[in-house]
Amino acid sequence: MAFAEPSAIYLVRHGEKASLGQDPALTPQGQLRAQNIAAILHRSGIQAIFSTPTTRTLQTAQPLAQRLGLKVERYDPAKPQALVDKVKALHGAVLVVGHSNTLPELVRLFGGEPGADIADDEYDRLYQLAPGPGGAPRTVLMSSLPAPGNTP
Image 1 (cartoon, helix red, strand yellow):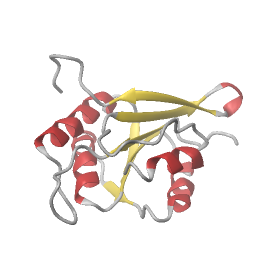
Image 2 (spheres, rainbow, N blue to C red):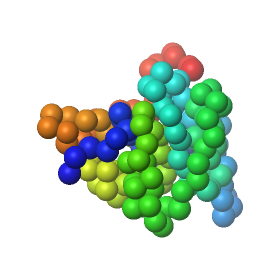
Image 3 (cartoon, rainbow, N blue to C red):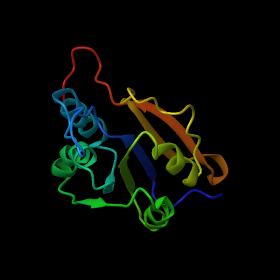
Image 4 (cartoon, rainbow, N blue to C red):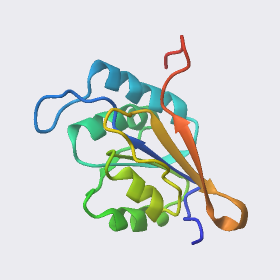
């Protein structure tokens, strides 16, 4: 499968969430992680940001969207192929914010290698899919954790 038009696709799970409620917000640690993601990606050429409609994913996407002056576009996590088709029509880098149980499938649909399942208590995995040799996507696993002593 040839790589999509975007120069890179970044996929990340939402930050740490409060344990109560049907649609929990981010915890202070989750809000810090969202700021870290914005600090990591603000110079990566992001042209579009996609998020599921939950509070925690939107709150994870918002700091980068504000920093770049972009609107967060919502997608239906139950229809991953529709998102893939939409993203493949774009140029520049793209960020997708999702969930532990949806990101591996999205990475696969974009032609990447998701690696091990994302544990329920794992929030720091950041995927980068970029064109590799021959046009096939190359998957790089990054971390959304700040280096010790660094803050965005």
